Length: 103
Image (cartoon, rainbow, N blue to C red; front, side, top):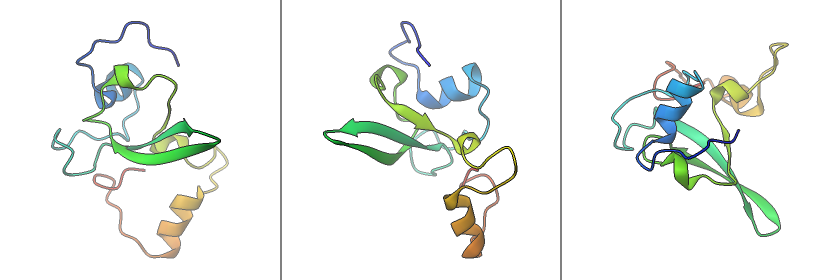
């Protein structure tokens, strides 16, 4: 997705929720403390791709040129198969209310 001339003040969280309709990105503290807005950020790091969790409420949209973002909507498949992350949570009996651990 290419965003033409994003506002310098626009956060990734607001863009994902308001412009893309991705509601797994939750609005929590807006200070990066609760983790409910966490997404995966992938970027080229030399000869490999580096993927890191980031707080989308703190990340400005205009600072993501060349980045790939994955939200909880990007996990799993339409056939119902779990993503390895989702399967690990299920196998480990992890709790998930859907707020602080989106997806």
